[in-house]
Each structure stands twice: as structure tokens, then as C-alpha cells.
Image (cartoon, rainbow, N blue to C red; front, side, top):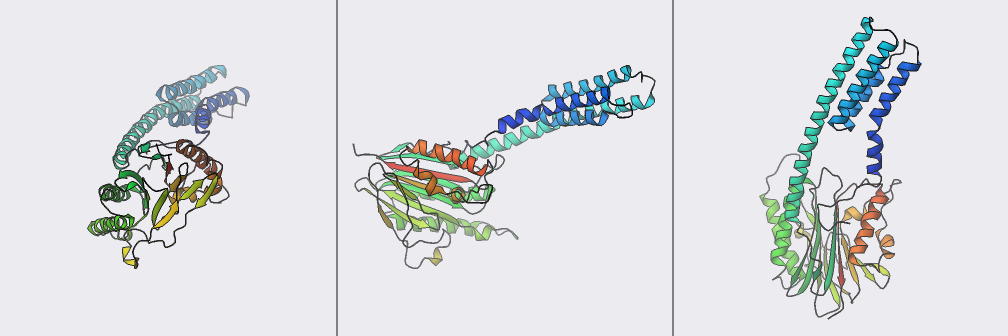
Length: 372
């Protein structure tokens, strides 16, 4: 389970597959030598030996690549001695080709290693940038216990538009979860702006409708400042968002939904989807709001939990194409702590998708603690 963006899921069995693949070059080397020993002289093993060296360059560190190359060339030279082919010009030509391929394999291995190092650096910068945007959520804010989860869809694309925040204010604990349309740096820029606006406005906005209006203004202003790029989706930028408020002195939770998936309420083993009575459009589409933002009020007693999530959770598919049944899966974990619940969700999403997540995933759990 992950509390912050630097953690992500690793598909189950990936380490085992990696170890098995690392044995492939040695296996090909042995097969090539056996072909040379136990087949007619007309059957040449050099193609298999060359494949062993190239696969070693892609799958092994430098020392492994060198060992495979030396082993292939030495083995072929041994076959020349065994078959009394030291005066065979064709055999020397094949040996020279294997030596050249071994040298290329070492060069190719170094090139791949340099590219991998560059990718690691880029990913590190991306993770640092997103950590600066998505601050770690405190585990306790007043009477509320919190836990967060972020899973990137791919190791190379850890920057995205999914976001969450929790702030203790004079009005209680206020929560935000959202999803900016798009991916990459533009989406992260919009997410950073939205989070900054929420962190500022959450303290002094008198209620959730006013807070939603402040966020709508910030998102619209940011979108209008972004230069229009032909063929891009920048002009269509919007963000779904869900705002929640858990007051200190009332056993309720107030929510405002702006085009976002409804949260789940976990109460005494039951799971209920809190469908909004009058949902609002996503942020930056505020012109479609005619009667203001509607607040939904739901009982929220000590021990109850609220699960907020982005659509990457419910749109996760298994191999047959079926969507992830979130409410059904969460029901069996409703008695767990927020940390344990998101741990189960993390592992279950990875297993359900076969380790192939198609979208970034963010989730936030808030549990009301008994009054002290």
C-alpha cells in the first residue's frame, strides 16, 4: 500500500520472470554448444551463439555480457579444435563474426545501461515534482483518521492529474479528491494549481458551495492563461472534484460533487454509494451551474468510514474486460482500519488487473474516531 506518490504497485511475479529471463542467455549458450557437438558439421551453431550474446546484452549486467561473449567465442574455438577445423577459412570467418558480435553486445549493454540511468533520473525528477504537489496526508486530523493511496499506471509515467488533500479548518476537516483531464506535465500543472487553491480557500470559505466556487474560478482562470496549442486538448481542460466536510460537533459528512465518482460510506459492515441528489459539472464548466452547488448531508458516526477515489479505481478491468466491482470488494474490508483497507484495495487492484493498470489511481479514506 502507498501513502504517497513514490510508492507504486509491482505486478506479482515480475521478479520471478526477471530471474528466469536472466537465465536465457546462458541457456542459449549451452544449446548452441550442444548443437555444435552433437549435430553434423554442416549444422552451424553460430546463429544460436550470437543470439545468446545479444540477449545477454539486453538482460545481463556488463560482467554477464562479457562472460557470455567470451564463453561463446571460446566454445566455438573449442569446436574448431574438436572438429580439426583450424585450417578451415569458413570457420575462422564465423569466429571473427562471433568476436565482432561479442564486442557489439558489450557496447549495446553499455548503451542500454546509460539509457536506463537517464530514465531513472527523469523518473526521480518526476517523483520529486509530484511529491511537491501531493503532500503526504497526515494520519490524524482532529477526530478523523486518514489514509491515502496513489498508484501510477506505468513506471515511466508517474506524473498525472489525480490529486487529493485533507485540511483541518475552523469548519472541521475538509477533503478534496479530484482528477484533471489528461496526463503529463500539463495535467500536473493544473493539479498543482487546484491543490494550491484548495489549500488557500479551505480555511476561510464559509461552506462547501463557496469553496467550490473558489475552485471553479481558479481552474477557469488557469485554463484561460494556458496558450492554445493546435491539435491539443488544452482548451478542453477541466477537472472532476469531490469536496467533503466532516464537522467537529456534528455526526455528519457534507459533500459537493463536481462530475466526480460518488464516495462510498462504510457503516457497520454495510457499504453505500452516496449518489448526489443534484450533481454539478466538473470544474471549469461552471457556466452549466444554474442553481449553485448542492450540498448532500449524510450521517457519519464514530467508526464510520468514507472512501473517496478517482475513476481509475472503478474503471480497472480484468482480462475479460469487466470493470472492478469496488463496492462489492470493499464490503469485506469495511471493518478494517483505513491503512488496512487501502492495503487490501492496493493488492486487489493489482491482482484484478493482472498488474496492467490502464489509468492512475488515487484513493482517500476518512474514519471518524470516537470523541475524546
